[in-house]
Image 1 (cartoon, rainbow, N blue to C red):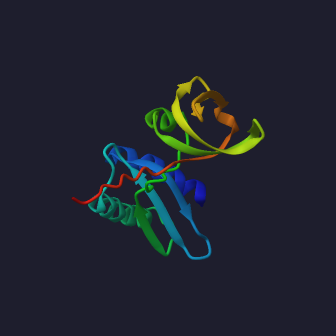
Image 2 (image 1 turned 90 degrees about the horizontal axis):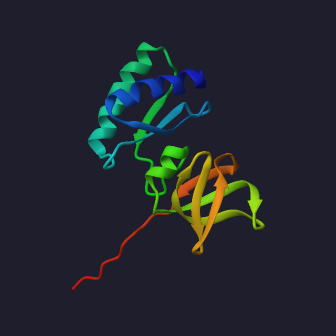
Amino acid sequence: MNVNVGQLLEKTLPPMGYELVEWDLSPRSGLLRVFIDKPGGIDVEDCADVSNHLSRLLTVENIEYERLEVSSPGLDRPLRNAADFARYSGEEARLTLREAIDNARRMKVVLRGVSGETLLVEKESVPLSIPLQNIEKARLVPRIEWRQRK
């Protein structure tokens, strides 16, 4: 059933103007979580629109679930593919690697782009090239700006 849900979401969301970032269906609780994004970010109305559309679609497609939750991927958005890494070039990310580089499987880097199947990054101002296939997990590091009151 999961393959059908993923395929359905991949087919449905882009024509609506949304990117499917991630989804999860918990067999135990029946909770279907869908994380969406679009250029400029999403708001509560986007989530409501997608939720309403998916509720009807999932019923028509006879996909079983108990609850549906549609939300933003959050400030620590997961990065899944070359396009994500390219789009967030210049941002900080936390990477978990399949095979260690310089004795480290986890690292905080600044994304510098993608060249073919290689992620270009800076770690402590030192350029590194990491094969995309070596990246197990990647998430943006939230950037929170503090302003003092005057």
